[in-house]
Structure formats: structure tokens, C-alpha cells
Image (cartoon, rainbow, N blue to C red; front, side, top):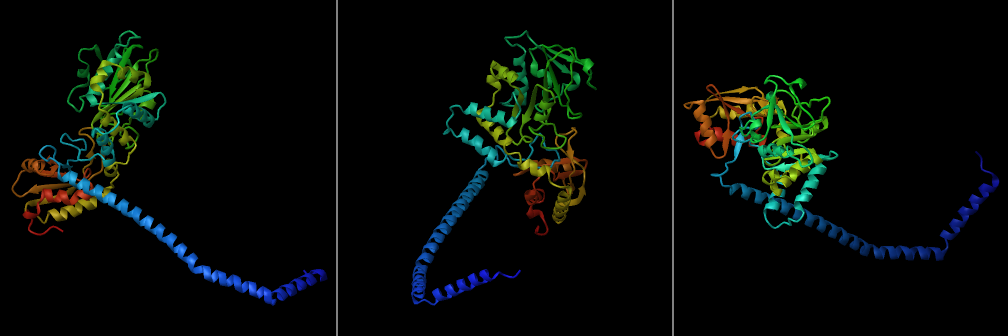
Length: 447
């Protein structure tokens, strides 16, 4: 669009005015002075900026150095701690049996973060005032279920035995404990579930093969104790016309639904059980203990009883249990998530190294599944080495490996020694290989 004559004249006058001011000696002098001042101040400004940058870099380097120094000191302390362990009392072991919860040990360590919190309370320089209440409140928050709490007992048997405190409540008539014969399981300690209630009225019902609601003859003053036998998932039973206290005992379980098909405390509480009892330890990522989760009113009755004075765990164990609940991604999580392809390639590399030893007669790779507990329903794909020694039987060889330091837990299948990799971290493959075939017994140097 063409500009009107008045607009063109305004632009012409503006350009002329700018040109006149630019050629004015006074204007040129002012611009020159400002430029001189800028050039004079430039080194000082640059110096100050450089000094500020240097200070920032020094601060970053100092922080990084302190962090690196702390990490180094922590690593050195860890190495010293492990090197100074009393191996005669507690020998480090690697679990190559294919069974996680093995009677000799799982081989899965508790994370340093969990151990540290327990150690802080055991050192003796911590404030004990209100510590128990603070830990109890934190455990309740982690359980994240309205009107529910969590107690920590010394072990699973003590936790189950504390149920007896619900039999005689001052505000009600005595209750009776009912256990179905199919749920009269033998606990990891070797004690049958009904035997934990010696001295109390325990009624057994039904047969050992299946559980149906008609087997129970209960009322509002009954305590129904059901246990996961490891064969079929445990589910609550509805009792029309009555509302007994329903208690689930889980020898093998986690707090959250952390692993597929493994029962969890929270899931069973949400399904309708009033109290759920499980064993703390490898699966929960914490120390060995007994965990009782359930309705606040029932757990308050247990906690206020005389029995609980003998069943309650030390605050350090409770604190470690709390730490394990806030740190679910522990060492076991890594082992559970190890892929089958990873196990296959590791077994092939280990087999290649072992066949170089003159002590190994044969070495084959198997693909039998690994399990959480012998004879139970929980299993994962795995790989294992089937080994035969030149002059030792599989039983003798397995016993020698168990007595080694560090120890190696294996299993025996006829003439074969089985070394399963599911519960061994990949970083320990070389150590396990040297335990099986020490370098001195190899005809060639292992790569």
C-alpha cells in the first residue's frame, strides 16, 4: 500500500534529524566518552566475573571432593568391616542351591541402608526417648491402611503365639482358636502351627485335603487361624451369621505386592483378613523377625498383653524392618528380575572356565527352575551347572564346598553337583568359579 504524503514527509524529517545529531560534534564527543568508560571498566568487570566463576568452581570442586572422600571412606570402612569378620562364627556364603530360603542361608544380604539404621540404635549413643513410638508411627504410615497397625516380634513363632492374648479379653467372654487341619502347617522353625498354642483351647476341624466353609462351626467369639501351605493361594472365608476374628499366617510373603504370585500382607488385609502374620527376612528385605499387621483394636490388645513383653522385638530390629519397607529395591529385587538370557550367558561363560580345570570331569548346563522354598508353588526360570568331579562323589564335594571360606551352598542330584545361578549376583560369578575350582588346581590360568 502506498504511503500518504504526510507519512513520507515525517519519515524524511526523522531521518534528517538523526543525521544532523549524528554529525553534531557534541554528540560525537559524548559517544566517545561513553565508549572510553566502557573500555576502561571492561577489565575490572571481566576480572570480577572471573573471580566469581573461580569461586563457584572452587565450591563445586570442594563439594565433589568431599563427596568423593566420603564415598571412599565409606567404601574403605565397608571393606575393613568385611575383612575383619569373624569367619569362624559367621562365614560368608553364596547360595547356588536353587532354593532361596535354604536352611543354610539365602546368601542374599540385607542392604547397607537397612543395616545402618539398626546399627545406629545399637551403638548406644542415640536418644531412646519416644524412639519406640516414633518407629511404631512410621511403620503404621508405611502400611498405608486406615485403622491398621504393624507390630514387630522377635520371630515368626513369637508373633503367632501372641495371638493367644486375644483369647482372654477383659471386655468379652473367652474365645476359642479354630484351625483347619489342612492349615496345620509346619512352620520354618519346624514347629507345627497348632503346637504354638499349647495350654489353650484349640479346636481342629475339616480334613487335610481341602477347605470348605462347612468344615467350620464358629461364632463371634471364634478366632479362625488359616495358614498358607505354599500349594494353594490363601483366601478368606465368609461365615454368614457370625463375624469371627480371621487371622492369616504366611511363612512366605512380602509386605507389598512386590513379586508375582508371592502373597503380600497388604493384599490379604484388603481381602478381608483381620490380622496377617508373616516372617521378616530375605523376602521383606529386612532382618529375621515376625511381623503382625492388622486392625488397630486387635493389635492394641496384643501389645498391651503380658505375652507381648516377651515377644516384642528390639527397637533396632523394628527400625531395620521400617527401613526395608521404605527401600523395596534391595538385593533380592535385582536377583528376582534377572532375565533368563542373562543366566544362560553367565552359565556358558562359567562352564567354559570350569572345563579348563583338571579337577572337573564333566560340565553340562541345565534349565530347571529355581524356587523360593522347597516343595512350594513359587518358582522362577533359571540355569544351573551339572558338574562331576574327577575323584570325588557329589555328596563329598558338596560338603567340602559348604565348609569352604567363603562357603558355597549347592545341591546334589545323583552323581551330579548342581550349581544354580538364580540366587547368585553376576558380580560373584568369578568368586564362585574359584571356590569350585581353585586356580592352583587348574591346568591353565582362568581368564
